[in-house]
Length: 158
Length: 158
DNA sequence: TATTGTTATACTCTATAACTATA
DNA sequence: TATAGTTATAGAGTATAACAATA
Image (tube, rainbow over all chains, first blue to last red; front, side, top):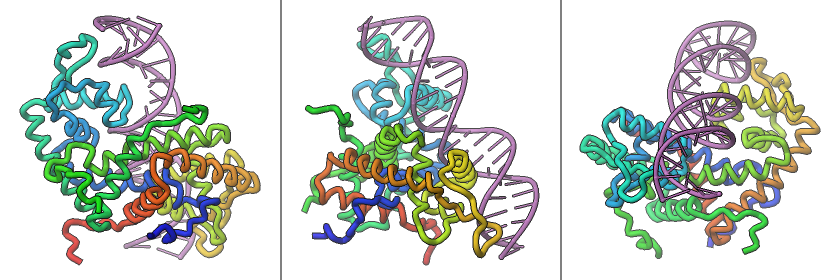
């Protein structure tokens, strides 16, 4: 339908065609809006990101959080440290793996999480007003698939 | 058509619905792939991002680059410093504004730029294999609009 | 041996502020 | 008074390596 809406000099990407640069700008815009929304709660984006992953029945390990958020090992240690320091989460012994920790939200953490969800929804709404409703769903759908895509090394002939 | 492909508990975003978190993961995936592609060229993503903006007829100021890339003032100073140190760009006096610099690619810079474009195209292709051709165009289109959207402050009743 | 988490180091990005030279 | 660029600082993210405890 609209495949020709962008004649797109495919041969010579000049910046607005480079998906990495687009994602960088898009992420910065979103991060600023989230930061603004979270300001009254006294937590940062990184804390909110972790909290949003803690509302599960199964125990969540730090390794799980790393995979879910695409963060670094040592960054995650600091994130959990900070959540513990604020009384929003605790490290518990993992039921089956004595190496791992089960990260659990505290009562206070669950209360903040509810606020975070509300704020996250507001941030989403504000950020996506530039798109039509069906386009918003489409963008989220494509982003999910893009972010979840497996990396294929160039010599992977599978 | 596919509006119901994601029933989406709109009321309780749990992480995969939060556009900021999706963009964060997507950007990290893209940045890693670009970094891998640029490795043989001996430059980093930040250098490539600037070079891609320098192929214009009009003089490009550092302020222009900041706006185009969504970078910081002081970060951009360093980026240009590093490009100059590598002999890939130079600061020239701006023709009409004596405060500003016109950033120009050198001959060597233009040669590297050609390589960067080729690598950027390859990175795009690798990253977008997870999507169908029409979906790729759609994602780029939506990201452009998202990234370029004006920020609306909550008390902006215009 | 491999994995979970911790600690430490170094580099980069970001945000902020103060400063200059121009406008 | 405002803007383009520079410099300096602090906070955060990322990458890496080494390590302890456990699998």
